[in-house]
Image 1 (cartoon, helix red, strand yellow):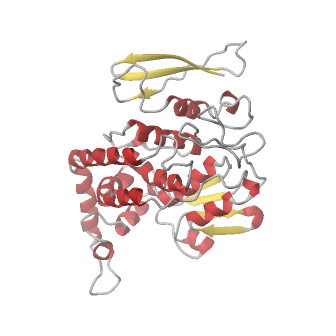
Image 2 (cartoon, helix red, strand yellow):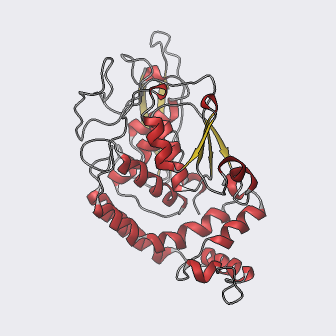
Image 3 (cartoon, helix red, strand yellow):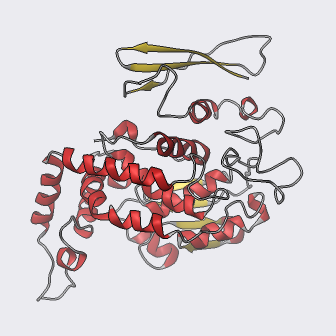
Length: 355
């Protein structure tokens, strides 16, 4: 049972109190405050959707609070894509959000080797989370070459390991396709195929340089992402990831005497200057671009008409890193979309460490 107890306003901060109890007869209460930094225009309006917030707060306590009629299913709506008997004939609409199937816990847990910031790694984490598959995560240091090379022959991520099959594989889309077609990991076909939407791809391309200028310096500056905990990891990233207007050949070089690449001291200076620069003009541009994206996202549950698809796996994984940028103003629908899939997929956003 979940009861929203009250909203309170204090110095521009909204606090949501929840009473949580599996047995309402005992009425034992837990007050769990959630603070939101932005002043609200209406008392009952939050950038984080109420259902997503409650799920993220209470999921560790009990899934029964969210779906008492179907054990093990977490939901944001009243109609299930997975029914108790079948999933193939479910009707999906804009008011029918994705629901997780029952928890899958293999005797030998799958292992995912990732970088936290990497959108391709996030794809796999999000897909496993949405399918409710328990797995282990190994965060690789950004300068760790031996570990991935020993696994798949080169430095890449993500890498998926399935100990019970003695399987190790790379490539995020191949990993997701394998997991979503294997009944050992719950109902198959959880994600609709990608629709090939050119409008979303065009939007992503249009903000590529803008996001590189804002995100890349913040990845290494936070000091909190696991792949950048040590100086060697941070410098390995800076060495290989250019900032606009530089292109990769100019930044990295090709190993020849004619094109050795930019000196490391210059790269470090450019990253430091990017962090020291006033980000307001870039953030203002990004805010406007997010409004454009909000207009073409189908609903707060999924970005394309028809249901949760590989469009969402890709788009959400790319948008997640925007939350590391302080001062971004998310349109309501897009913010609800980010919060909902974060909670369902068990992949946290960066809001609390934003710079």
